[in-house]
Image (cartoon, one colour):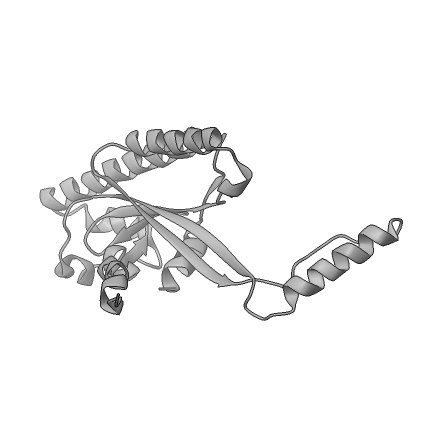
Length: 211
């Protein structure tokens, strides 16, 4: 039976580039971005759970809690998950000089695992929580050249002239409040099962820039 290589890579191709989904325009505050299209998003880093160390009941419990956390986000909120694989090593380990037999066994095991370059891999898991905001055109961004360097003062200045702009500012502000609340609730739901960390804009931009 022949395997079609194009069929295997179809999901990868359909996923597209991160920049197509999260086209960063500027940072609104210390941990929130706005895209060129007007969406707001935050990035979470999660510590994965090794299912091999858990029994089926525990895995099911974690899955149900994650499902509940996703459900409470509601409509208008999208979650994009990114799993990044990269080389890892050498493995850190503790020495046991008072137990020479144990120390020798650990050293032999560590040496075996570190022997082949690229054998050890690290997986980083990120979640981008996106709030669908008002549609913003290119002409809007061209009128705000200082947005990246001084976002708060520019927002106030840009949205003080017309009623339409003021309404757009209110929509973005409401979206920011909703996103803040949803992300906080999402983390609280997973507190006992999955450790998640809200990234600041510098760390989040570094993550986005990797794609």
